[in-house]
Image 1 (cartoon, rainbow, N blue to C red):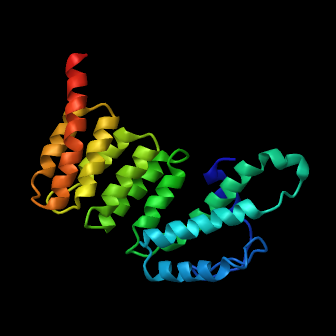
Image 2: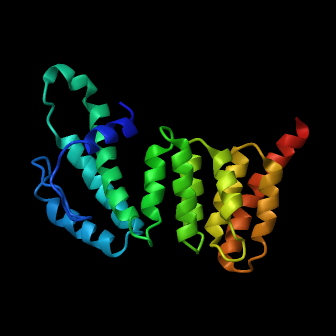
Image 3: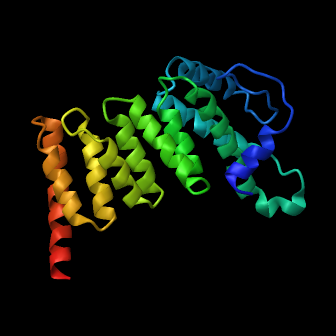
Length: 226
């Protein structure tokens, strides 16, 4: 079952109310993980954009899903996919709760990642909303990276072009956009955005330019020789 369909089925079940960011009781949770899980959830309530806390908590959720024993041995061969979906549903629920905070942008990126292939239009809306909530360019970098990792570099390039401010945003945002252009086989766009990075005069930007320049030049040579 696709993730969004599974979510719809789960969300229509009657279930007790609980506070955002609190852990649902489950016999599958490892006792040694529970204190750390509660601490991570508390951190995310205070700062919903704590990427390290979110990723560590997501790993705990996945580990818990892997520890669940098969209910029926006859369907054990399907368990890995079922466990992965269960983990995604749990992570979706957490991200959805945190995304209600008007300061939250990283949970929107996670929701976009989980829905990218089931609801592409909705995923792009979430990524654009994340970029509008965050002003250093970190959301732009994470949004473009998410699309690149989803094998959609052209969409990543489009998101970046629409949201990137070369003077105001961190160099990593520009780096991700140039990489997206290269992966989308658009070397001339890559060159253009590489040149735009040069409006910043600092060591971090210089390092990014030095890293990307030979890759852009190689892509241009390939394009010119074909």
